[in-house]
Image (cartoon, rainbow, N blue to C red; front, side, top):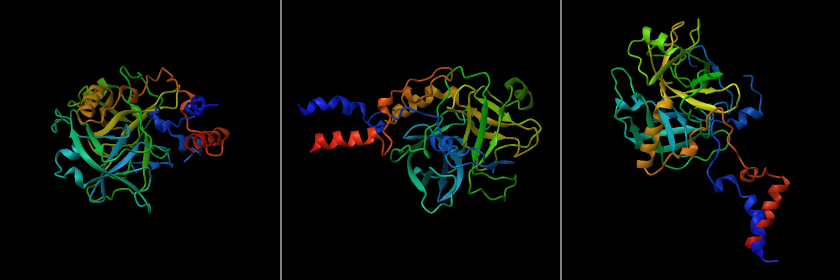
Length: 318
C-alpha cells in the first residue's frame, strides 16, 4: 500500500499547534482541580484560575498588570506607560504563575508598547495599551488567552473577578503583593455611576460590590476585569483596571476601560505591527457555541490516539 494512503488518518490526528490555538477564555488546569480556594479585601487566587493574567515589570519590579489576548499580544492600561520613560527593552512580562517569587519564572521581553493615540490623562479616557512580546507564548493551561466580548455584550454577566499583585491596603508606602489576589465584582449601572463620577465616559464602566470595600489598588492597574456568562465556562475581558477615587472605600466603585469598544483599534494596531489579532481570536458571542473538531485536539499522552499518531509518524519518516 502506498505510504500516501496513510496521510488521511494522520491528518485527523494532527496536533492543535499545527493550526491556530482555537480556544480562548478557558481555565483547563483550574477546572480540573479543586475550585475552593490582595487586592483590597481579596483572597489568594488558585493555580490556573486566571491563566491570562501577567505581571508587567521594570527592572524586575512589578508595577502593572496585563492580560494575554493572543500568542503575541498583552493588553494593559495606557496610564501604566504614559508618564514612565521606560523603553520597551527594559520591560519584562512574567506569565504562567501566581507567585512572583517562584524559583523559575517564565519571562518574556517586550519589543513594542502601543498607547492609544487618544488617551487623555486628565479624565483617563481611552486608557488602553498593547504590548508586543519578543517571542510567541505557548499556551499550556497555566498560560491561556482570554476572550474579548463581542458587541453588544450581555446586559448582565454571571460572575466577574478582578485579579492582581497590587497593594492590599491604601497608602503610598504599602508593599506590592507577591501572590496573585482576586476579588469579586459587580458591574454597576452606568447612568447612576456617572452622576457620582462626572468624568466617566462611554469608554468606561464602573464595578464594585455593594456595601463592601472590595477594590483594585495601586499595582493592579492594567489588569483584567474578567467575566463569564451563566450559560458557559468561557471568560471574557470585559474591563481593564483604570482609575478610582481611592482604594477600598466602602460602596465606592472603581473605573475600568470598556474593552468591547476597542475591537477595531486592536485589529488595526496589531495588523500594522505585522502580528495581526485575527477575527477568529475574538471570543464568539456568549450566546453562540463555537464548533470544535475532535480532530484538532492533541491526543493525551498514553492514549490510543497518541500511540497511533507516533506509529504513523515513524512509518512516514522511516
